Length: 289
Ligand SMILES: [Zn+2]
Image (tube, rainbow, N blue to C red; front, side, top):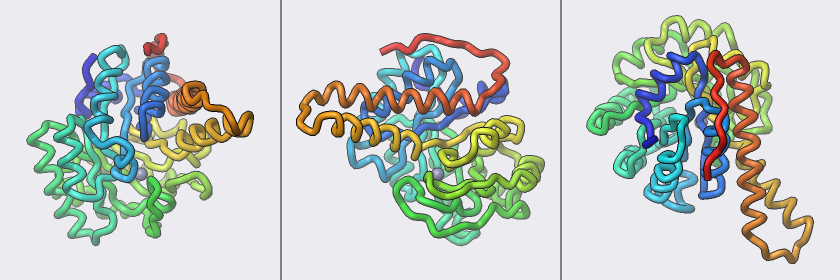
């Protein structure tokens, strides 16, 4: 099927009471590894890329690759811009055919965050795609950028922020951290409090370091999208490193690439299972390629 609009993907997710993984890609091998796993799982998902990883290819190549594979898939997939820190990145992604975007204005103070987020939401309306924004600052190594902030989402700001920006998805900082090396601990009372008052579905970033049993509880806490990036990259790099260690003189790049692709696929498939321990209507399909 063609790439699915982010609004439709969220509707499907809510209807099926499952969580969409949102997996960060960088290049062709990562893209194919992610999409193989999504198709095998049968559970709708987002594939996403942040501007930090765009230099390898550009928005257009990523959109073309994902579109090409999506046409051969039976599992709904949306293409999302992760951590769009400038209006220009949001615009470039929308023009390239991304079906969902994040505008990340966490570096601004509250009022400025609202203003920039509102502008991105108004812009995205022209493309008919949903906008995710972050309230509070998620600590850690954010998609190769180091984030110093560590402010949990203030529940008193949630309704005001969503209403004034018109944002469609809210990324929350509830003890989740970006990257692998920190010790995340989800503040479930805070998450539940936000869920009760928030008019839009929630997104959890930084799932790579969160214990599986905490990830598994997200579906019952109003979270529709869980971002995973670091785990995939580590799997890819470790696979390539292992190939090198086996034979520093090897030149069969194709096998090194295929092994890295498979390593990404295995991690993504595992993550999807962890997020959806008891999916009500599991659909297992063979990955196409
Ligand atoms: Zn993030």
